[in-house]
Amino acid sequence: MIYFSLPCVVCFSSVKDFKHPVTNMPKHPYIYQEHGNTYQADTCEDLSAAVQAGNVRLEALARGSYPGQRLEHLTLPGIKSIGFWDAIGPQTWGLDWHRNEGIELTYLETGSFCFSVNAHQHRLKPDDLTITRPWQPHRVGDPYVEAGRLHWIILDVDVRRPNQDWKWPKWLILKKEDITELTNLLRHNEQQVWRSTSDIRHCFKKIGAAVEQDRNGNQISRLTVYINELFLHLLEMLREKNIDLNPSLSSTHRTVELFFGDLKSNRETLCEPWTVETMAQQCGLGVTSFVHYCKHLFNTTPAQYLNQLRIEAATRQLIDNPRLSITEIAYSSGFCSSQYFATVFRRHTGFSPKEFRELYISKRNI
Figure 1 (cartoon, rainbow, N blue to C red):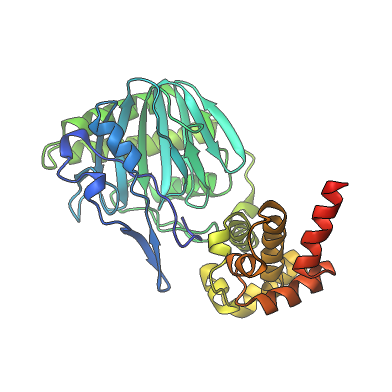
Figure 2 (figure 1 turned 90 degrees about the vertical axis):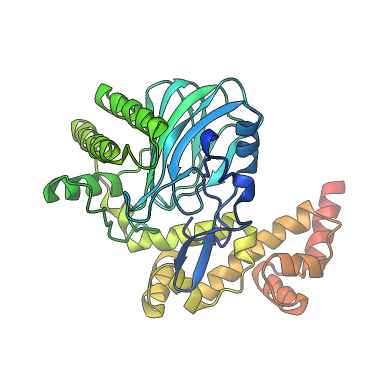
């Protein structure tokens, strides 16, 4: 995930490779480092337990924090995880909200379950294809996964923000013009769920079989051909849809909007000791440009808008958690002291935190 300090990334393990089980992975394996910040991955222990209990069969080739058979350093660079799971019945686990290091394609071969992206929930059916970009939070299950066979591929194209340039691996041999067209179709359109074509369906099945049969890399040449074929068929499918492209989806404005949206939805991230410099850095911008975009989007400075989001979070806590002290709410909303919190709170609401809470309680009791 590109903006959270403790993001959750889908992790898969292979049934036949439990010398690399999830539970033996480092507690917080890093998945990506940028500008001195380390981003970490979830360990998906519930999924691992389901595999060990025999409730799910998984086959995966992976690297980094993604468990599975290890891909060699120079083998299919950019592939983070590729494979499938086969859940034989309703499960007691799900993949909670997370993001990935790269673009993720999943294909549901059999079964059905809920798949959510941002605020949109979908009921996946057989032959549904999902496409998620690194900045799109998504989850599988509501909250649990149901019976089904799900294929996936996660390919890192070296982007974490919408406005960055995509860098495809050299082993992807589509001609330059096709790569450019595919990139534009994926950057400027964020539809999450599609009906797959028969060609895409056959590609995923062939990829799954090759992953399952791989022994010490003896299927890599076959996989390279199949993955190239998959992205060619993906390009052809998107071409046929005559998609209305929206260039603003890859704009710097949207990167800044997504950053503040993440702060608003995640109090843990909101509480980090942000400065204008670190916020700008997180968006890949210089301070001057970052301030400009904030002013344009929110008609205020980054620091003022950050305080506004923290006051909104504190207001919810004052209402929802009457047993928390004012000091506890101040710190849990990102303020460095209760005095500064009270000053900013009064400036935004016209009341002290204590007055606001008492007023709300009195109105509720009327």
